Image 1 (tube, rainbow, N blue to C red):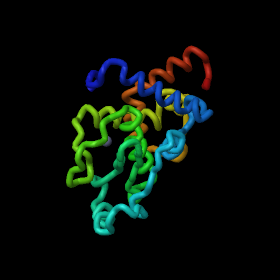
Image 2: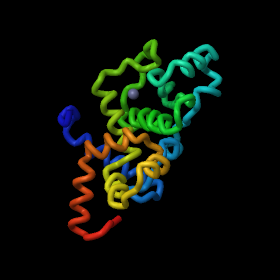
Image 3: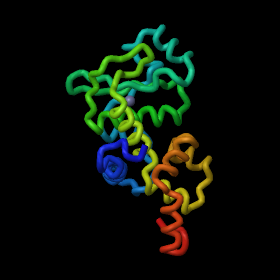
Length: 194
Ligand SMILES: [Zn+2]
């Protein structure tokens, strides 16, 4: 699992997370919601429920088919791009769905793949894995994780401030080895820094 990405991809993801925060005048560890980033990148983000280009029966289908259905999709018409997301999902799930779509756009993935019956595009796995990784990194970069851990922020606060699920937080903390990094920082500087 650690070597599935091309060399440098994980650092590149952290770099994007920090560059976008800088452009938005946010601290490197600050929360950055997907909609804020979309606005900054000038990508319209539209909820499925009120989208006039989607027939009602399709909305109903996506509304009632549980967690495994349609999350979000990027409409790509020449140079025009917009993200349609499933606003029937929990707001934290919406946040990560939009971040995922933004990751596809940031990485320049070809968005012309056909849409399958379940609403997903038929990408190859590598591209999906990249978008998953970058989407999660944008919301919770390693610097944010270290900040959260050093400050002993309770999980409820992490969820609310960063708009992420507990499982996303645990996943990111694990893959970035953030607990060890926080421990090293504490050892080096004594008390909570940043
Ligand atoms: Zn995707």
